[in-house]
Image 1 (cartoon, one colour):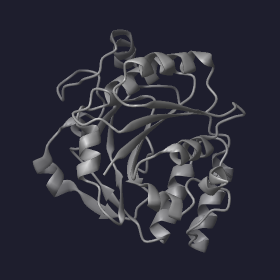
Image 2 (tube, one colour; image 1 turned 30 degrees about the vertical axis):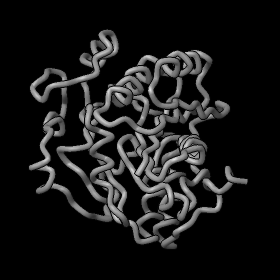
Image 3 (cartoon, one colour; image 1 turned 180 degrees about the vertical axis):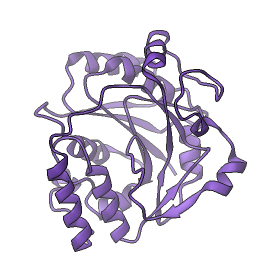
Image 4 (cartoon, one colour; image 1 turned 120 degrees about the vertical axis):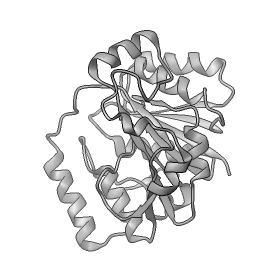
Length: 262
């Protein structure tokens, strides 16, 4: 099975460089990296071109015009370009443990998507990480907020892996799934504009189509660089879209990834 790594980004090349560099430092490399760019300036494009020159795997730049926060459409565009059976999603402010890709692949399972955990780096530590271009972390290191998530143990993972259909803790900053399952529910719903709930609504349609969540602890670890919270002005409207999907038990959205295959 082959893997496409999709990295979402918007105008933060300093963080994106660490995210891509950590992806290229994996014990098992992804077969391709696709940067899902929600309208960044040329600085991000130039960074991707620079990193592509020495990369052992293709790095593709999937770009859309900047007309506001459109993460759902940005992800769909990137996933539509993916050539492989399995898709791993992260955000461009995530630094990956060296076994991240390997563990997403080894934990993949028919009828499931994987939700991994993140370790939150403090604001002060994040400045240091960006300055030093730090790619690896210790469980005991200062500047980690929820350091229990930094424990790497396949033994503990076997006890704490859970199968669920909960929305709690849904995060596309550390998620993976079979591309065929994504296409089956028509990907992310592009009716979502502005931050919030596009990931939960996508997962709800997966649930309704018979796919369950495989929650992984102590494997599939990624470190989240601190940043200011996104604008949440659209959250109320986005909550309504999510609730409609829940109420109608929808398995499909009309405005989804199929648009990009025409």
